[in-house]
Amino acid sequence: MEFAERLDSLAVKVKNQATAIATEEATKNAFVMPFIAGILGYDVFDPLEVVPEFIADVGLKKGEKIDYAIMRDGEVQILIECKPSMGALKIEHASQLFRYFAVTNARIAVLTNGVQWHFYTDLDAPNRMDAKPFLVLDLLDIDETLVPEIQKLSKDSFDLESIVNAAEELKYIGALKREIAAQFREPTDEWIKFFASRVYDGMLTQRVRQQFTGLVGKAAQQFLTERVNDRLKAALGVGGASQASDLPPTSSSEVVEADLDRDTELETTLEELEGYQIVKAIACGEVKPQRVTQRDAKSYFAVLLDDNNRKPIARLHFNGKQKYLGLLDEDKVETRHPITDLDEIYSHAEEIREAVRRFL
Image 1 (cartoon, rainbow, N blue to C red):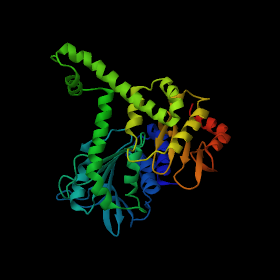
Image 2 (image 1 turned 45 degrees about the vertical axis):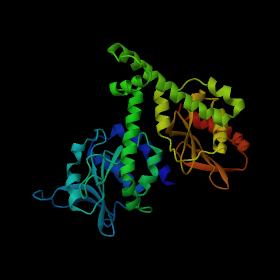
Image 3 (image 1 turned 90 degrees about the vertical axis):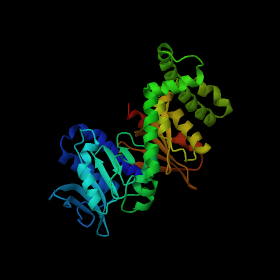
Image 4 (image 1 turned 180 degrees about the horizontal axis):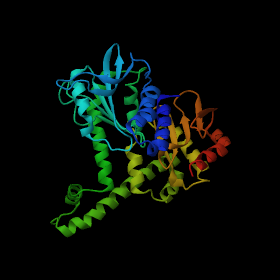
C-alpha cells in the first residue's frame, strides 16, 4: 500500500474505534503504535529504532519518562508524548516535551491523542520547542496537502532538513487555513467590519453591523458555491455550463471544507475531470449529484462521497502512461483496472454504484 493509503486505512480504524478507547495505554496500543509502525515504518519492538518510556533526566526531575523516542543512528530524532484519545490536546499537556526537547538532539516533538497529531519544532528559538505546532494532522479529517510532509518523517523517506525548512510555511499556512475556515463558518466582528467598510460608505452603526453579519455569511456561501460550479462548468465544457448552474447549491460548510483541502500546486488535468464526470454520472443513480465530489492528490485523483476521504467511490490513476481506474472493496483494498479509453469506466458501473451504496 502507498503511504497515503496506509494513512487512510488507519483513519478508518480511528473513526470506528475512537469512542471505545478510554485510557492512555489503550490509545497507545490501538492508535499510536500502529501510526509509528504502519505509517512511519519504524519497528516498535526494536529499541534501536523506537524506545518506549524514554528517560532523560532534566535538572532536578529524575526518572521522568517520555512515551516514545524514535531513534536514527543512535540519536533521538522524534519525541512523542501521548494522551487519551477521548481528551482534547492542550499545550499544557506538552510540559515534558518542552523539557526533553531542550536536552536531547530531537528536532521534532509530537503531542498526540491518537486522533490528532501536533508536530512541533524550534522555529522561535534554537533547541527550545515552540508553543504552537507547525503541523496539525487530524485523522478524522485528513488534509491531503500535509501527507507528503508527514511522509518525510517516515523511516524510508526520512528528510529532517526538508521538513524543518518547510516548518515555518506549514505553520502559518495551516493556521491561516483554519482561521479562514472558522471565519466562513462564523464571521467575527472584525471580519464583518473589514468587508462592510469596503462596500458601505456610511457610518458603521450597530444596526448596519447586524445587517452585514448576515450579508457577509451569505456572500461567502455564494462565492464558494460559484467557485465549485465554475469548476464543474470547466469540466463539462461549454455545452454543459447550464447543467452545472442548475446543480443544487452546496452548503457553506461543505464548500469551505472542500475548497480549503485542495492543494493549489496540483495540476488537475481535463482528462481527470472528464473521468470524474463519468464516475459522477454513474454514482448519481444512487445519490444526489452534489454529494459526489472530487479531491486531487499527487498520486491519484479521488472521487468521494460527501467530500469525505473515508468514503472513496473511485480513484483515477491518470499520471502515468498506463491509466487505471482504482476501485476499493469493503475492506478499503484497492484493485486497479487498466483502461485505455475513458468510456471503459462505464463497464465498471455496477462496482461504482456498489461502492456508493456501502456508505449509505
